[in-house]
Amino acid sequence: MRGTRRGTAAVAVTAAGLMTLTAGCGLVGDAGSAPALSPDPTPPFTAQTVADEIAGFARAAGLPDGDTSEPGPAQGDWRACVAPWTGEAPTAGAAGAFDATVTRLRQHDWEIVSSHTEQDITYRTLSKRGWMLYARYYDGDGAGTARTVSLNAVEDSCRLPGKVRADYEDPV
Image 1 (tube, one colour):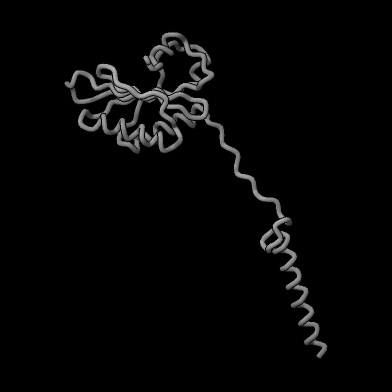
Image 2 (spheres, one colour):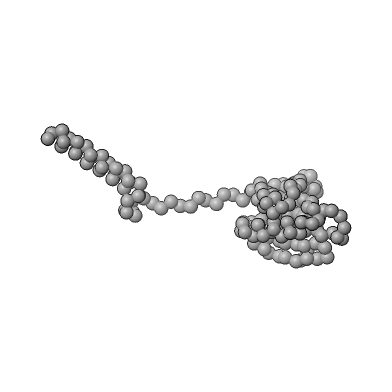
């Protein structure tokens, strides 16, 4: 009998320990025992994050790898707040790939600010978390085997040199 009681007591202690452990983790119906987890803070939306997002969505939409170098004045802090992307796409699929890229951007929280066409250039301006993205599709004169697509993002607080800003801004 003594051995049986000892075994029973051990089980009761073990069960009590599990109950305490489980209750301490907030898994057993005591809502007040564990604070609710807060969602992860939003990661910073840096120039590199924006550049990676643009390149990834462009590639996924069928555009080739683009050029991410920035022409213009070599000096200035402005380069840290710009995410440039320019590519040449085969004429046959360029317009569709441009539209698909804009659609992917919109599916990932980029909001259309402006959309229009002037002569042979289609403009789409989008915004997200303090950035403006100037998307352009250059249709050209209908000749040639490639079309230019540019997807250039600029942080809202960025102080661009005049000529660079003129190259990006939507003419509307």
